[in-house]
Length: 304
Image (cartoon, rainbow, N blue to C red):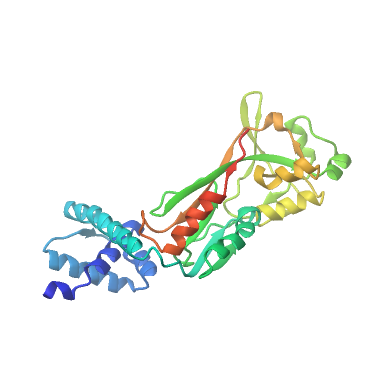
């Protein structure tokens, strides 16, 4: 009977978080505990099991062979438990606050237009939306889902690809009438190139000329903190901007913007992912249905 007094599923969930997130502190933030409480919990598990699961050092945690087996089976146990609960509560609608962080272009062109439909379908969910082109720590910000564009850094987070988009240099007809339509990459040096001032932005614009990829420095009289702000500046005729194709395809079709130097476009793309904590079914129902909704509604495939 003593075994029934131990919340083994709760302990197992904390242990799995320690491994997935790479440490006691990160797991503590995700579980709403203190690092010392997480460390003591793992120690109690090891004492009860009679074996060491994790080798601890000042820099990293490393699973022992017994810990590897325990972790792999533990993940399956938690996934099976979640599946059993989902089957038993299939009639229960998702509920609670869902904190979503997205880059600004994706937010304006996809997330905000889709929010009413999602909330109509799941009225017991409250959306808490933050738009920024800075990459945040989703654990520190207590974020359920973050949408990120560009290459993903190696981490313990899970990711679901939503699509990919090519990049294109654009300018407004009024700006191009005043300064001329460039026909060669070198002519960009005489133009006002609008750049981004967030940390993950590229140092320059990649161009392919005579089979060689070069990077042109961005020299202009204005910078902005997100891609949608650059979009607005380009529409206003301030200069040229390099933007995701999904941002500007309607403007190009309507004549509000023109593509520039497409013959020299290197064809690079930005992948768009939804990033989240949790493996398989091991995540809140509100986040799971939101991910499925995004994947079903969002289609970003702007490669010709």
